[in-house]
Figure 1 (cartoon, chains in turn yellow, orange):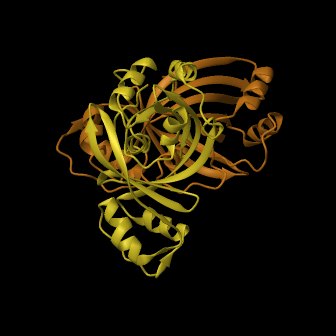
Figure 2: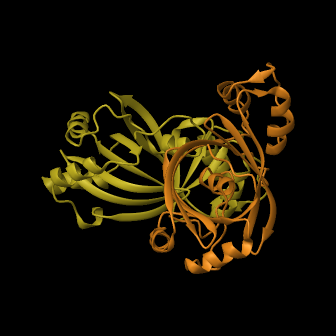
Figure 3: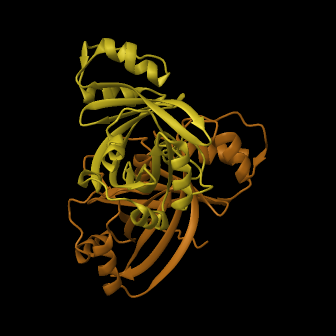
Amino acid sequence: MIKEKLNVEESQAPRFEFRTFGRDFEETAFLMSRLSVPVPRQMWERHSEEIYIVSRTNDVNNTKIRDGKIDIKTFVQNVDDLEQWNPLLKGEFPMKVEILKKEIFPVFKVHIPKFDKNEYTLDGFLKIINHHPDLQAVKVEKERFGYMVNDTICEYANVWINGAMLVTVNSESTVINDIKKTINDIAVEGIENINYLQAIKRVIGWIEKPLAN
Amino acid sequence: MTKHTEARYEFRIFGLDLQPYKQKLAELSEKSQTRQMQWVYLLATGNTDNNVKIGEGVTDIKVLKERYKGLELWSPFFVREFPLHTDVIKTVVFSALGVSNPKFSRIEYTLEQFIAELITPDRNLPVAYVNKKRQGYYLNDCIAEIAEIIVNGAFIKTMCIESENPEKVLATKKLLGIDESLENVNYPLALKRIMGLVGLPENWKK
């Protein structure tokens, strides 16, 4: 039974998520660690370096690039302040210009720039992004510690956005009530649900709102 | 707010692991004090020679006068409390930012009006809200500090050595064991990097 639950990490079932960002979630980290069932070793601690592409005109598609692969998720719905995101598309660089024009750039909901090549490497793609007035590539480094509380996947993570540090905690599952119970159990009740795009936009000054603490 | 009026050579770094320098400063320092303050930095991307910030209702502009052996000489240029007269905003503040003047609808602006009506609507004028908790030191005739700063909610640290005498700053760098190859990064540049307004060098990591 536990094994089946833990495999949800790899499953494609759309999950609801509570996530928030701030600078101090020490109590939450402690509670997560004490309430968690044992998790597979690969979830204990994970490090990654990613590039998020943020768009001034779009908050419904979350685009990130890791190890030369692009991964786009799209917002589905908000239920009781929990957000549900679905995988939308995945791709790998180098990428054909037709895919950029017809699949990737429409996701950003900005005007499509002019392309002068048939195929783009990641560096070439990032040059286009950084020249676009409504898009920005943001470097995000993560140090994630995984837990499983009330059958929800949880993490406590240190996150560096262009070198400046934040802490994030989350709980995700296909079962809303499990997340709600976890929010209460890990002492984040009443705290704003802030997803990655929102946190990044606040740090880079596109949204003038505070983080959770 | 205490203001210095003389130009100083400055060496500054940003990062999260400044503990070795902090330890060394604590060992060698003659005196230290702690200050905490909230600043608003105005960050026009094309402007690299003027540091324009507002703290406790006072506009404070410093000008980069010279680069010398990896140090930067910053000179106080303008310090004035809000409200500011439109002519001053036009000829001093916007001129320092290097952006074209917006339309003005008032003769003078309070800080709130200035930010809400002249800065926020202009996409070319990103703003960084910076909370600084600064620990000051004095050694080798230099002022030094280690500060914990929060930039638009995110955390980073900075260390600085400054003096009117550049050779003193260079000697203090050596005293603290600061690697020659370490990049001197001023506040506006660091904030622009964090906010993605300029590219990140390879060594700009956590």
